[in-house]
Length: 60
Image (tube, rainbow, N blue to C red; front, top):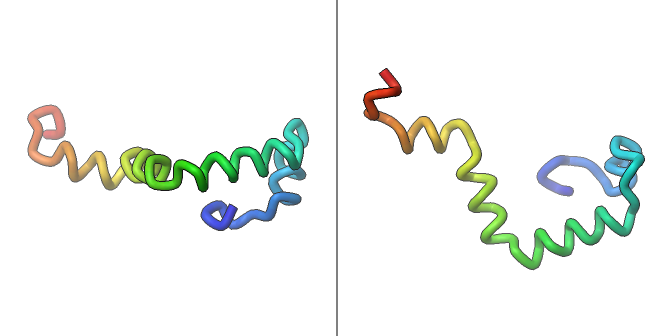
């Protein structure tokens, strides 16, 4: 939750349809697959795609 800046309790308040256990399960999955998920997060940022597609004809 550090990235989002919210505690587990805050997440439950914002999304009352999920449980504490589900948040902790998601955190556990993230930490077990941190490198892969961080790569996906990075590749979904606008700056990444602007740089990756720089100079392509459709960008003009």
